[in-house]
Length: 66
Length: 198
Image (cartoon, rainbow over all chains, first blue to last red; front, side):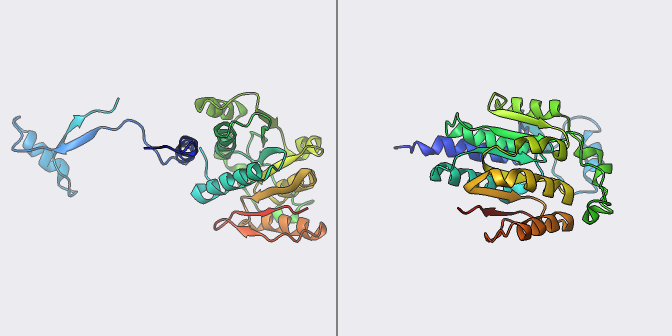
């Protein structure tokens, strides 16, 4: 596909603008829900206590930000 | 890096694109830069367009907002912005911010000091875009008095703090004294601009 010569310039300006506005993010760690029961003694209870005040979901990292 | 928000950043971009498209000569300046975000953006736009014959002037006390001189500028009475340490960002920190974006070079000029002391030396300079973000009546009026005559026809005058009563009164007084009739364009809830006519 043909790319306009303006596109990289406009993309740079837009990215610079968003960065200066704090609308971009750095490396992030993505989480996924934990399937099944936690297999460590006591972990299930601690998770339940930790999540009790909020509608949280047990999760674990599957891709760490670098 | 900046407090001015998306619409006022868009406005900076639009004004610079207009002066580049229209061939309006002159440099770019912001008076009152805080961490430098708007001026970094100005320099980045020049870089993106491959412009090498214009500079970005970064004018600030780098010590925060001055204490109001209510005797000379009654409109500033009661303003306490000088007590906010967060508004004082050193010139070294602003330079470092430019460097973080790879935009610190000889097309960036730092004008360090109180506007009343530094801006008179820029009276004869030619400007394509002048952006004022000094909050106070005194800061706004000093900048207009020293920079507006150098704004080239077709250039843009931007005011960030029009929502602040003291700033709005400075703009109103200056426009009345100079018989400036160019219509004021609202950018957002506090930003305004107008294009200087021939």
